[in-house]
Image (cartoon, rainbow, N blue to C red; front, side):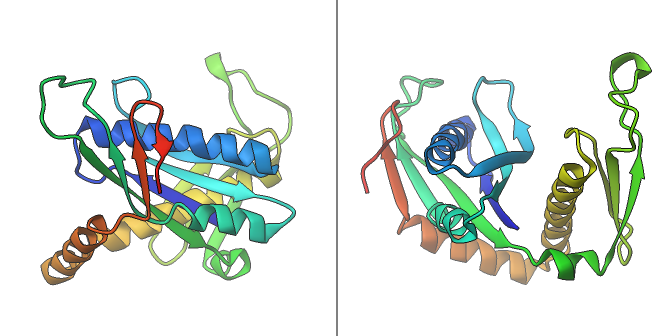
Length: 208
């Protein structure tokens, strides 16, 4: 399973706009390459098209193709553009990042229990008559997620795996010591000085 986490970090709304534009670009690339893309989770701001973060799952018969695409978005990235939210603001450099994860689903499943349940729709009506919703629980930590967005149990199980993995990674970050956080921040600052991709203007044109 190939996942990509896009994040604006602690940056302002312009960085979240960059994440939204990156997401649109990735969706276009996936359509062109025949890669199935699922948005597992996204934190959207009130400003249209702005995302604090987005967790993406790639699926393709040619797994190398999905991995190559995700890898091409890994690292610190820069969007150079005049702010549409603060027109008089002098700053034009907005950073965001991508982190790829390659998950061994068999290995992950060893520490996870899955339960199926009936998916429910609006007003308490059942979406279908099968137990297609899936709850995944990490036995060691007790962290649990429930997914019912897809019609099939198999598809919901794959999304549950991805979402649970993201929750576990977030927990690891929360448990980092101050020294570890300082090292991580230093690494991020170094990466910002050497972005893997640079985009320019409202059209989000790739310049390198």
